[in-house]
Length: 137
Figure 1 (cartoon, rainbow, N blue to C red):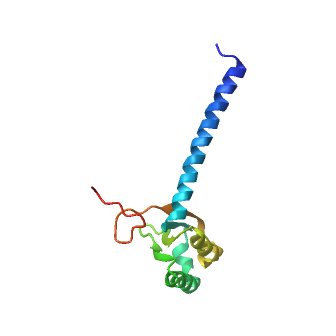
Figure 2: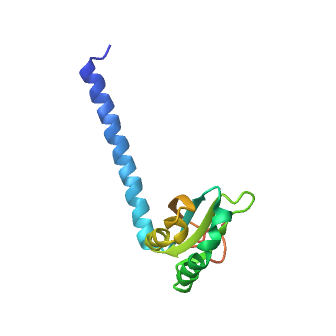
């Protein structure tokens, strides 16, 4: 039977190795993102009364979105249907900064039509506009 100290040592060693592996993975991901223009998905969770309330803020929201598209930040964007409970905005760039700035300024977010949002890097590999095209051999 292992002593308590031995068990603690084994657990600490395992945690250290896991943290090191996670740090290496994160470091590689960050390095990849810095070397490539990638896509970022801005994902909105919409309030249950989104459709009823959006009219008051839609013009300002669309102006913000079209301005971002003109700057080359938004590729395509829109709400999901049936049910209209989420929206997805595809951004392109070297970092998630533009997507995060957009969300913070969006009248849908500011006025509570979006209950929460998050940005995810999306490593696109197929299609004319893929950020990292990968073709079969």
